[in-house]
Length: 485
Ligand code: NAD
Image (cartoon, rainbow, N blue to C red; front, side, top):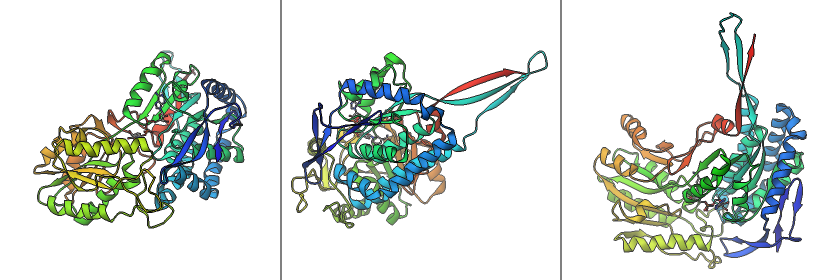
């Protein structure tokens, strides 16, 4: 069985003198690789290497050379597309149609867009009138923050990791990546790319292992890690925030959601149906932006419920390597147990299933972590199933009568990441989009991304925004220099 190494200061760390843990292929439910488990001492070594690299060739490199290197990283990801695709699919079980159209191209695109944005970034300057009439000029310079700790989840491993690494490197920082223990492969592969294109040793480091009391926590609490960027569960964000407090670290948090989709009676029925099928079941519901609460106007409720149920039943759960497969497995046995426990709760809380609610065993993949696409209805708004993030191929359908009522229901949650609204009435679209408490609202579409726009959530769904200049600002410190004329 192959071993996935870590990368510290340009040195590949294999299994010698290190323990390892199993890396599962979730489609098959069997381990397919071993992963080197880094120690807290390894994290310290990575931090020292990353600190040193800040002052080496990387720190002295011109912006032009730095962005040219990052463009090369993007090109090389595309050249090694098949290797990235195979690694991501083995780790996640996601279908080839999804990984090849979204995960890998976005991994490359993240480097391209942030390299170009950094290259064309301007800065503020102000002229100050002084009593002696000579004045002073102020200009603002964006300085690197230093060593950035990048802690990532398993649902879109390469996409979400490069979303952070690319702007951090574009602004001249060095990074230590801790990928999810479930999906370590593409972070290591990106290390090979960094080496191949000549990114200096110590600029991009990868440590493997777990969160609490392990490498994750060691990064958060290390005094020389200047900032933490984290995507994951809200509860983990809360734990990280408490641990980071001692060193007053800047934090960027992209956390959980319980996103509403609202389908009005005047919506284009077919588009709303197609869009909602995607927003509920994409990546087996394991996208932070997925809709778990779907509110449908009573005038079309029965027809929409029936049509969405038919769509869910039509999803193809099969070999992820087949282009015709539309849904893969959940990430792990532990996660499947969690999703299954919510299916049990649907019944206990008085809901009914329109479809699904059980595990699935596609032929040849009987031991994998699959569940049926699932739709429930009949629950009250106070049910736990309506309040807690499930993160599986699941939604609950609720009918509504009035616009005000549905805005209230959509907002009655501790989360505020994303919302989808389906209506042909432009005035209503504006009104509702502005009233929904969320960081991102899509109208008549879902997951249509312009990487220059701010991305993040309100309430328990996050702190700060990444994307475009917001990323460049988080991964830099503004220094004001005032010069008397
Ligand atoms: P998770 O919080 O369990 O783990 C995320 C990462 O944090 C992993 O690398 C894990 O090892 C590490 N970690 C766990 N505890 C830690 C600790 N105490 N200290 C330091 N590191 C620690 O999340 P997950 O299960 O991997 O991902 C799913 C969650 O991520 C969902 O809640 C989903 O909504 C959220 N998510 C949010 C966004 C967004 O942009 N808002 C995007 C994707 C996923």
